[in-house]
Length: 190
Image (cartoon, rainbow, N blue to C red; front, side, top):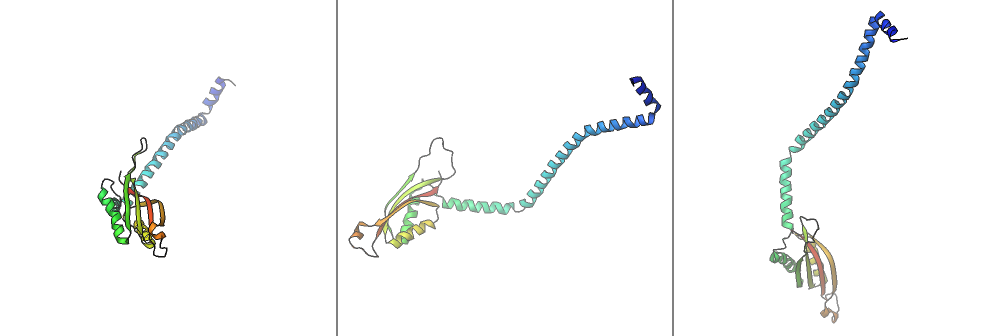
């Protein structure tokens, strides 16, 4: 069968030839539009996700003012509990207030601020080191530690060394005084 024979058969049957041509054109058009439909479906999904996000924002945004007020309260509370290393008198006063409340006596109290390390990432908060030497009855020393634990500042006890006072070695008993050496860190602004 040659090309001339094929053209002759197509002329003899014009309706099936036209229908076949229409089917071929439709398949070609469908193939071209299929990628366009997929792109439109993807874009529609993106718009639907954006619409859901906006609806969620509207729902959750109704209480946004209340949440902002709560956050401001928490920031104010944090600011009150974090010390400022430059305010040495106020910082030391905190330890002396606890001393007065518990009945121990502070023999030595020192504040030291660690120097920033070069190349280290900047932090919002830093630690302020303290070394405290207290003397008193054992229950008073424990009360001092309890006051630190439940006090207004955030702290971390690095080390503690409790021993009998030198004067207690000569008169042992339940009421003999002890000395405690504390190394601790308070949370502070840099």
